[in-house]
Image 1 (cartoon, rainbow, N blue to C red):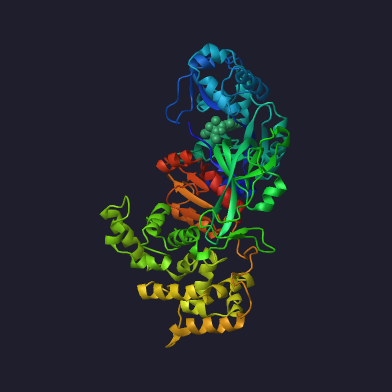
Image 2: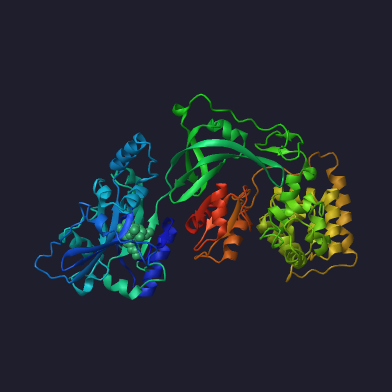
Length: 628
Ligand code: IVH
């Protein structure tokens, strides 16, 4: 049993239609729209009209034999109304599900008996069908909708999916009444929207609609990929909301010192992924939402992926909820925490004396979209700082195998690998170096634009704000931030260290006629700007939204398993292009673990730490919703 490819949004539905038409060589295709029942998929085998076997989908290849259990489902006929036809062997597929009202009743009863309630109707259906004792299954009101006859054409006069549904009904099956024949792709979005708006009026849960090519002859011609048929697509609805509890509100210190509060939630399932955290962004957001530690809250996935607290269920307060207060001192370095005028964020004033900021800066430097230093993960950075082998990014290139070998849990081989990875990073193109430096508002895209325009680090450093804003897409905020960054004395030191280590400062393929003595440009530029900004106060640049979309800023992803719609590199590039970060290992600070197929131990680690796990579809949805 295959599964279905998912489409999010009208654009992906049009893509589906384009693919179908181009493979079929047709101008126009008729589709059926069906509700996507959120239950448990089953396959039924009838021999000479009698139900012989029922199986779950399992891994698609091998399912569980649930014949005894399915026989107790009242809407599944034990004998077909074959109207005189001898159907030697007939396979039927569909979904068994738990009606919502019955699910709620079952959960009330379970709670009264002190049993754990089911998380949702789907889990209740799965738990009921998999019951070892069919008597238990029989006592629960499971229902069914059938929708497919995979091998029908040999035995029955059916030429279309519509006829399949009609025939199933004639044979005595329960068929969902809300299917529609849709003439051409134009009719599809309306059907999707209609059921998205009406889904809550149904007595059972649906998680989308399924669009199928109506002509069964075309099904055969279109065939299937290794995972899903090419003649169908699932249009998934936006994620539902769930209730849970705020166990704690913790804060993390980011690379630029911004202190971000995050709600630690009692883990809940929201449309397929477990949510354990919700970013609360800043003090104002907490105040507006009125969130207290211990509150029962409604959470949903914003942009359908990022968990957010929608509202507090005040009526459920017990009186022991606690107000969250922003720490007055940085939880990492103890330096004062300030909230500057006009800013929403609190910031640690420790700067590069704050180990969290230093560590985050080094991690960022070595991250995938930046200098891509394999093995430079959070624990290694922490160990390097702890052992005082490095004090900042500039010291990385002085690290020797002998020194690294002395780190806790570091064997010779890993020390060699780390030093080799650091060495290799010297060859990275300028665009990555610019991004790696961690200049505020300079994301990967800005790095690329600047590198293409200026060609060398010296030229970027020496550019005036006017010259910087002359670059297409670089606005005054980015320009001010870059100019300010290069005038800091630490920046000069860092650049010199990197130069001495032999780090590449040029963008390959960009021709720059470097005049003799141009290397001194850096110093000259610094002086020039120093004079210009004398008395200008804070040089960190205004903290408004950057011109270049960075919707994922502050969000760290870890990818595990195989992705199917993108290569790992593509996925990483897309995340980084939107200001997100990709890390190689899971920690408490990981925002999301993206689990592809056959995920590894990172998934286990994520579950242990309560990190939110999303799947590839979630990632796609997130990247699409955040601007492309
Ligand atoms: S057609 C090759 N039609 O959705 C699979 N599936 O995400 C063809 N589902 O495994 C499936 N309602 O369990 C189809 N009207 C419907 C459906 C439906 C629910 C489930 C089914 C399938 C899953 C795919």
